[in-house]
Amino acid sequence: MPKTMMAVRVHAFGGPEALVYEEIPCPEPGPGEVLVRVHAACLNPPDWYARSGFMDFPEEIRPTLSLPLTPGSDISGVVAAVGPGVTEFAEGDAVFGLVRFPGFNDGGRGYAEYTTAPVDHLARKPATIDHVHAAGVPMAGLTAYQFLFDLFDDVRLEPGDTVLVNGAAGGVGHFFVQLAKNRGAHVIGVASGRHEEFLLGLGVDEFIDYTTTSVEEKVRDVDYLFDTVGGPHGHRFLPVLKRGGVISAVFLGEYRPERAAELGITFVTGQVRSNGAQMAELARLIDAGRVRVGVDSVFPLADARKAHERAERGHIRGKIILSVAEGS
Image: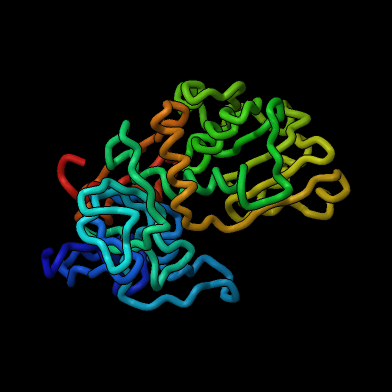
């Protein structure tokens, strides 16, 4: 194995210019870990939050980060070496996963040619897609999967339920759409008009262009709102939910909880976590043709700064990917 590798690190918090492409020592896998030759990595909001030192977060919930740090929790690649006691994977296996999340100081370190990963955070890569698309699955796919089916007892999505996804074309949103459709829900997707064809192709039953249509004036009797946008105006969705409805917000938002309680609306939220078994289920759905991965754009690892600049412009369709190995 090589003694050194190229990686992208942050030495001082700041904007995209804080990302430095440099040569660093290659890691070695510990017990229960594998070394992965990264073929592709994915950008996620925690990457740019960490890059900036979480300065936009209230101080009381701001993580303490150690520098230098290597961002990146979503990877797809090939096992290059196995650590002591590993029997789940062998050298040459193609794998993907959300690595060491939540966690930042000991996070996934995916913006690199090689990284280590606990075996229970990985699954075999779907055979029907390349590494670039596979890297777009982990955090976004697991967030949707766990919000819908796993983490929260309050959410019991049943066939025929009406689901509204705000920010439906984004990374998490487009997985919410597809997983809810797979469960037999009636799905309403909210995004800008340029995403209409994309979302109809993913199976939304109704599309609403928020730039021309007021959702709260058009929609009623929604069972579940999955809001991937949040922000100060989240409360505008309260009229669309039926009594007993549920709001699951991926990002912080102002939903006027006292008014929501008067309307019988409850809130369910939480933190996505690494889970290799659920990654395997997502891989199964992808290989069965029941879930597709949207890719907004692809940048070489050396251009991670440009990838973060693209993320800051917003209006992302699917995921932004870093291509680490040629032919991925």
